[in-house]
Amino acid sequence: MVLYRYLKSLLNKRSNISSVQGQMQKMIESQWVYAAKKNVKIFEDIRDSGFRCYSQFEEDGIILYLLSLVGKKKRTVVEICCGTGDECMAANLIINHGFKGYLFDGSAENVRAAKRFFKGQKDCLLVEPSIEHAWITRSNVNDLLKKIGAIGEIDLLSLDMDGNDYYIWQAIEVINPRICVFEIHNIIPSDLALTIPYSDGFYAMDKRGGELDFRSVSLLAMIKLSTSKGYTMVGSHKHGFNVFFVRNDLLNDLLPRPTIDQIDDNEWTRSARKDRWPLVKDYPWVEV
Image (tube, rainbow, N blue to C red; front, side, top):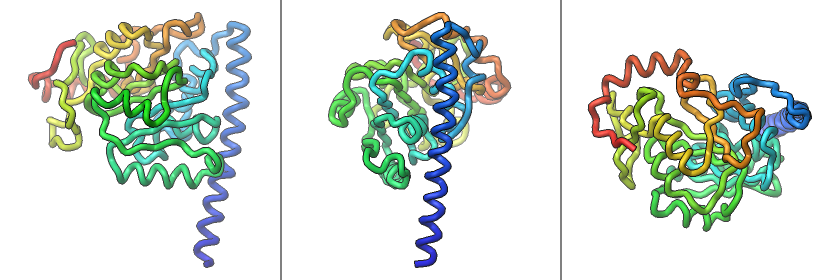
Protein backbone atom coordinates (compact mmCIF):
# COMPACT_ATOMS: atom_id res chain seq x y z
CA MET A 1 0.00 0.00 0.00
CA VAL A 2 2.85 2.39 0.82
CA LEU A 3 4.51 1.64 -2.54
CA TYR A 4 1.18 2.17 -4.33
CA ARG A 5 0.72 5.58 -2.70
CA TYR A 6 4.29 6.54 -3.56
CA LEU A 7 3.91 5.56 -7.21
CA LYS A 8 0.56 7.35 -7.41
CA SER A 9 2.13 10.50 -5.97
CA LEU A 10 4.84 10.35 -8.65
CA LEU A 11 2.23 10.02 -11.38
CA ASN A 12 0.30 12.95 -9.93
CA LYS A 13 3.45 15.08 -9.90
CA ARG A 14 4.17 14.19 -13.54
CA SER A 15 0.59 15.04 -14.52
CA ASN A 16 0.79 18.36 -12.69
CA ILE A 17 4.09 19.17 -14.41
CA SER A 18 2.48 18.35 -17.74
CA SER A 19 -0.39 20.70 -16.93
CA VAL A 20 2.04 23.54 -16.21
CA GLN A 21 3.97 22.76 -19.40
CA GLY A 22 0.73 22.93 -21.33
CA GLN A 23 -0.10 26.36 -19.95
CA MET A 24 3.41 27.63 -20.70
CA GLN A 25 3.11 26.37 -24.27
CA LYS A 26 -0.24 28.10 -24.69
CA MET A 27 1.35 31.37 -23.57
CA ILE A 28 4.13 30.96 -26.14
CA GLU A 29 1.64 29.98 -28.81
CA SER A 30 -0.53 33.02 -28.12
CA GLN A 31 2.47 35.27 -28.81
CA TRP A 32 3.14 33.45 -32.07
CA VAL A 33 -0.50 33.76 -33.12
CA TYR A 34 -0.51 37.48 -32.24
CA ALA A 35 2.63 38.05 -34.31
CA ALA A 36 1.14 36.12 -37.22
CA LYS A 37 -1.97 38.30 -37.17
CA LYS A 38 0.32 41.32 -37.40
CA ASN A 39 2.15 39.60 -40.29
CA VAL A 40 5.37 39.56 -38.26
CA LYS A 41 7.74 36.67 -38.97
CA ILE A 42 9.33 35.51 -35.73
CA PHE A 43 11.57 32.80 -37.18
CA GLU A 44 13.28 32.67 -40.56
CA ASP A 45 13.90 28.95 -40.01
CA ILE A 46 11.28 26.79 -38.28
CA ARG A 47 14.05 24.89 -36.49
CA ASP A 48 14.50 27.94 -34.27
CA SER A 49 10.98 27.46 -32.88
CA GLY A 50 11.72 23.96 -31.68
CA PHE A 51 11.42 22.49 -28.22
CA ARG A 52 10.93 18.98 -26.91
CA CYS A 53 8.20 17.83 -24.56
CA TYR A 54 7.32 14.36 -25.85
CA SER A 55 8.95 14.36 -29.29
CA GLN A 56 12.34 12.74 -29.78
CA PHE A 57 13.95 15.98 -30.85
CA GLU A 58 12.54 19.52 -31.06
CA GLU A 59 9.51 18.72 -33.22
CA ASP A 60 6.91 19.59 -30.55
CA GLY A 61 7.83 23.26 -30.79
CA ILE A 62 7.99 23.24 -34.58
CA ILE A 63 4.54 21.65 -34.83
CA LEU A 64 3.06 24.21 -32.45
CA TYR A 65 4.69 27.06 -34.37
CA LEU A 66 3.35 25.82 -37.70
CA LEU A 67 -0.12 25.45 -36.21
CA SER A 68 0.09 29.06 -35.02
CA LEU A 69 0.74 30.12 -38.63
CA VAL A 70 -1.88 28.01 -40.41
CA GLY A 71 -4.44 27.63 -37.64
CA LYS A 72 -6.10 24.64 -36.01
CA LYS A 73 -9.21 23.31 -37.71
CA LYS A 74 -10.36 19.99 -36.27
CA ARG A 75 -7.80 19.59 -33.47
CA THR A 76 -7.00 16.10 -34.71
CA VAL A 77 -3.72 14.28 -35.27
CA VAL A 78 -2.97 10.99 -37.03
CA GLU A 79 0.30 9.21 -36.34
CA ILE A 80 1.35 6.08 -38.19
CA CYS A 81 3.97 4.22 -36.14
CA CYS A 82 3.48 5.90 -32.78
CA GLY A 83 5.75 3.52 -30.86
CA THR A 84 5.09 3.42 -27.13
CA GLY A 85 3.35 6.80 -27.18
CA ASP A 86 5.59 8.56 -24.70
CA GLU A 87 7.95 9.74 -27.43
CA CYS A 88 6.05 10.60 -30.56
CA MET A 89 4.78 13.56 -32.58
CA ALA A 90 1.19 13.29 -31.38
CA ALA A 91 1.59 13.11 -27.59
CA ASN A 92 2.13 16.80 -26.90
CA LEU A 93 -0.89 17.83 -28.95
CA ILE A 94 -3.05 15.19 -27.27
CA ILE A 95 -1.94 15.81 -23.68
CA ASN A 96 -1.25 19.54 -23.60
CA HIS A 97 -3.53 20.90 -26.34
CA GLY A 98 -6.63 18.72 -26.23
CA PHE A 99 -6.26 17.14 -29.66
CA LYS A 100 -8.07 13.96 -30.61
CA GLY A 101 -5.45 11.40 -31.55
CA TYR A 102 -5.69 8.50 -33.99
CA LEU A 103 -2.56 6.39 -33.56
CA PHE A 104 -1.31 3.19 -35.18
CA ASP A 105 1.58 0.85 -34.57
CA GLY A 106 2.53 -2.54 -35.98
CA SER A 107 3.76 -3.86 -32.62
CA ALA A 108 1.16 -5.18 -30.18
CA GLU A 109 3.61 -4.58 -27.34
CA ASN A 110 4.04 -0.94 -28.37
CA VAL A 111 0.28 -0.46 -28.57
CA ARG A 112 -0.21 -1.85 -25.05
CA ALA A 113 2.52 0.46 -23.75
CA ALA A 114 1.01 3.47 -25.54
CA LYS A 115 -2.43 2.77 -24.08
CA ARG A 116 -0.92 2.51 -20.60
CA PHE A 117 0.97 5.76 -21.12
CA PHE A 118 -2.04 7.81 -22.18
CA LYS A 119 -4.28 6.19 -19.57
CA GLY A 120 -1.84 7.52 -16.96
CA GLN A 121 -2.26 11.12 -18.15
CA LYS A 122 -4.86 13.12 -16.24
CA ASP A 123 -5.45 15.31 -19.27
CA CYS A 124 -6.58 12.21 -21.19
CA LEU A 125 -8.84 10.96 -18.41
CA LEU A 126 -12.13 11.47 -20.24
CA VAL A 127 -10.99 11.42 -23.87
CA GLU A 128 -8.18 8.98 -24.58
CA PRO A 129 -6.64 8.75 -28.05
CA SER A 130 -7.71 5.92 -30.32
CA ILE A 131 -4.74 3.54 -30.63
CA GLU A 132 -4.87 0.59 -33.02
CA HIS A 133 -2.56 -2.35 -33.55
CA ALA A 134 -2.29 -2.70 -37.32
CA TRP A 135 0.28 -3.53 -39.96
CA ILE A 136 -0.15 -0.69 -42.43
CA THR A 137 -0.03 -1.45 -46.15
CA ARG A 138 -0.96 0.63 -49.17
CA SER A 139 -4.02 -1.56 -49.71
CA ASN A 140 -5.42 -1.24 -46.17
CA VAL A 141 -4.37 2.21 -44.96
CA ASN A 142 -7.52 4.02 -46.07
CA ASP A 143 -9.85 1.38 -44.64
CA LEU A 144 -7.95 1.47 -41.33
CA LEU A 145 -8.20 5.25 -41.17
CA LYS A 146 -11.94 5.13 -41.85
CA LYS A 147 -12.44 2.35 -39.30
CA ILE A 148 -10.69 4.30 -36.55
CA GLY A 149 -12.68 7.45 -37.39
CA ALA A 150 -10.00 9.56 -39.09
CA ILE A 151 -11.71 11.01 -42.16
CA GLY A 152 -11.47 14.35 -43.95
CA GLU A 153 -9.45 17.32 -42.79
CA ILE A 154 -7.00 16.78 -39.95
CA ASP A 155 -4.43 19.14 -38.48
CA LEU A 156 -1.36 16.90 -38.49
CA LEU A 157 -0.23 13.67 -40.11
CA SER A 158 2.96 12.07 -38.81
CA LEU A 159 4.43 9.19 -40.78
CA ASP A 160 7.60 7.36 -39.71
CA MET A 161 7.67 3.73 -40.84
CA ASP A 162 11.34 3.26 -41.73
CA GLY A 163 10.18 1.46 -44.83
CA ASN A 164 7.15 1.93 -47.06
CA ASP A 165 6.66 5.59 -46.15
CA TYR A 166 6.59 6.77 -49.77
CA TYR A 167 3.96 4.24 -50.83
CA ILE A 168 1.73 4.79 -47.80
CA TRP A 169 1.68 8.56 -48.28
CA GLN A 170 1.01 7.99 -51.97
CA ALA A 171 -1.95 5.74 -51.10
CA ILE A 172 -3.58 7.91 -48.43
CA GLU A 173 -6.80 9.47 -49.71
CA VAL A 174 -9.39 9.61 -46.92
CA ILE A 175 -7.66 12.27 -44.81
CA ASN A 176 -6.61 15.76 -45.85
CA PRO A 177 -3.81 16.89 -43.50
CA ARG A 178 -3.06 20.57 -43.04
CA ILE A 179 0.49 19.80 -41.91
CA CYS A 180 2.56 16.67 -42.50
CA VAL A 181 5.79 15.53 -40.90
CA PHE A 182 7.67 12.70 -42.57
CA GLU A 183 10.87 10.96 -41.63
CA ILE A 184 13.08 10.67 -44.70
CA HIS A 185 16.40 8.87 -45.11
CA ASN A 186 18.99 11.62 -45.34
CA ILE A 187 21.92 9.35 -46.13
CA ILE A 188 20.60 9.35 -49.72
CA PRO A 189 22.21 12.15 -51.80
CA SER A 190 20.02 15.20 -52.32
CA ASP A 191 19.82 14.85 -56.11
CA LEU A 192 18.35 11.32 -56.02
CA ALA A 193 14.62 10.57 -55.83
CA LEU A 194 14.76 7.05 -54.43
CA THR A 195 12.75 4.67 -52.31
CA ILE A 196 12.77 0.93 -51.67
CA PRO A 197 10.78 -1.61 -53.72
CA TYR A 198 7.33 -1.99 -52.20
CA SER A 199 6.67 -5.02 -50.01
CA ASP A 200 3.70 -5.44 -47.66
CA GLY A 201 5.87 -7.11 -45.05
CA PHE A 202 8.93 -4.86 -45.16
CA TYR A 203 10.41 -4.38 -41.68
CA ALA A 204 13.70 -2.51 -41.40
CA MET A 205 14.54 -3.97 -37.99
CA ASP A 206 14.83 -7.41 -39.59
CA LYS A 207 17.94 -6.17 -41.39
CA ARG A 208 21.49 -6.45 -40.08
CA GLY A 209 24.60 -4.30 -40.41
CA GLY A 210 24.75 -1.94 -43.36
CA GLU A 211 21.62 -3.51 -44.87
CA LEU A 212 19.62 -1.66 -42.21
CA ASP A 213 20.11 1.50 -44.27
CA PHE A 214 18.30 0.06 -47.27
CA ARG A 215 14.97 1.53 -46.24
CA SER A 216 12.62 4.50 -46.39
CA VAL A 217 12.73 7.33 -48.94
CA SER A 218 14.95 10.21 -50.01
CA LEU A 219 14.05 13.83 -49.39
CA LEU A 220 13.78 14.61 -53.10
CA ALA A 221 11.40 11.69 -53.63
CA MET A 222 9.16 12.84 -50.77
CA ILE A 223 9.19 16.41 -52.06
CA LYS A 224 8.14 15.24 -55.53
CA LEU A 225 5.31 13.10 -54.14
CA SER A 226 4.10 15.76 -51.71
CA THR A 227 4.17 18.41 -54.43
CA SER A 228 1.96 16.20 -56.59
CA LYS A 229 -0.46 15.93 -53.66
CA GLY A 230 -0.60 19.69 -53.12
CA TYR A 231 1.98 20.27 -50.37
CA THR A 232 5.07 22.45 -50.00
CA MET A 233 8.10 21.77 -47.83
CA VAL A 234 8.55 24.42 -45.13
CA GLY A 235 11.50 23.04 -43.17
CA SER A 236 12.87 20.30 -40.97
CA HIS A 237 14.21 19.65 -37.51
CA LYS A 238 17.88 20.37 -36.82
CA HIS A 239 19.17 17.00 -38.08
CA GLY A 240 17.34 17.23 -41.40
CA PHE A 241 15.51 13.89 -41.47
CA ASN A 242 12.15 14.89 -39.99
CA VAL A 243 10.70 17.16 -42.65
CA PHE A 244 7.56 19.32 -42.55
CA PHE A 245 5.08 20.08 -45.32
CA VAL A 246 2.09 22.45 -45.38
CA ARG A 247 -0.92 22.14 -47.67
CA ASN A 248 -0.70 24.69 -50.46
CA ASP A 249 -4.00 26.44 -49.73
CA LEU A 250 -2.66 27.32 -46.26
CA LEU A 251 0.67 28.81 -47.37
CA ASN A 252 1.43 32.39 -46.37
CA ASP A 253 4.36 34.80 -46.38
CA LEU A 254 5.37 33.79 -42.85
CA LEU A 255 6.16 30.22 -43.88
CA PRO A 256 9.68 29.63 -45.23
CA ARG A 257 10.38 27.69 -48.43
CA PRO A 258 13.84 26.22 -47.82
CA THR A 259 15.89 24.47 -50.47
CA ILE A 260 17.05 20.87 -50.19
CA ASP A 261 20.59 22.15 -49.64
CA GLN A 262 19.40 24.18 -46.66
CA ILE A 263 17.71 21.12 -45.14
CA ASP A 264 20.88 19.10 -45.70
CA ASP A 265 23.13 21.74 -44.14
CA ASN A 266 23.74 19.99 -40.81
CA GLU A 267 26.50 17.85 -39.38
CA TRP A 268 24.38 14.72 -38.96
CA THR A 269 23.40 14.59 -42.63
CA ARG A 270 26.94 15.24 -43.84
CA SER A 271 28.39 12.54 -41.59
CA ALA A 272 25.69 9.93 -42.24
CA ARG A 273 25.83 10.44 -46.00
CA LYS A 274 29.61 10.18 -46.10
CA ASP A 275 29.88 7.04 -43.96
CA ARG A 276 26.72 5.08 -44.72
CA TRP A 277 25.52 5.80 -48.25
CA PRO A 278 28.47 3.99 -49.89
CA LEU A 279 27.41 0.80 -48.09
CA VAL A 280 23.95 0.67 -49.72
CA LYS A 281 24.21 2.79 -52.86
CA ASP A 282 24.26 -0.31 -55.09
CA TYR A 283 21.17 -1.89 -53.53
CA PRO A 284 18.04 -2.15 -55.74
CA TRP A 285 16.59 1.30 -55.02
CA VAL A 286 13.54 2.43 -57.00
CA GLU A 287 13.73 5.79 -58.76
CA VAL A 288 10.49 7.77 -58.53
